[in-house]
Length: 233
Image (cartoon, rainbow, N blue to C red):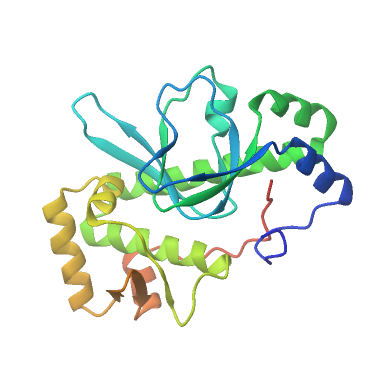
């Protein structure tokens, strides 16, 4: 993964430090929590493969998906810093994780300031994604919300080399989409069907094909940002 153009280069010393800090390579099955709400011993992870999402739930079972996690994303930074996790992280597909002990995080900040900056950068990037989702839930209509979600995931998958002929794996259920967009399942289903009829995208065999990426981006007013390669821990 480190060789993908989406990620910036690391020095030999940084790579050695990351390798010595890593304690495990773990698999979590789809539908299982990587970190559960309130967990006090959560480790820090890099998502090596698969998809996951961060969520918060209300006592009556209602759930808000905060953002989706793709390969290369840092998982569990908040839970590693605070006494207990304020949210849960669930595997959307089967995932592989590089595991780093939370007790080594301070060691990283003391000994490797460039890596510490990378961790802070990744935390800020995740905050930006939550900002975007909050803007959708608060200000966009249903069609705009769905278009914004689809185009943002498309851009993120494309940066990782996961898009071919404007098509990429799309493991989200309509319930998960509804939970991310703050819509009812019925409203989500109707909006999804409408955008498919209008020729924005097609879903078949678990792959989503954007038939008109520019129109989808224009509907959502979400445009691809030109970004430099990002850190990978």
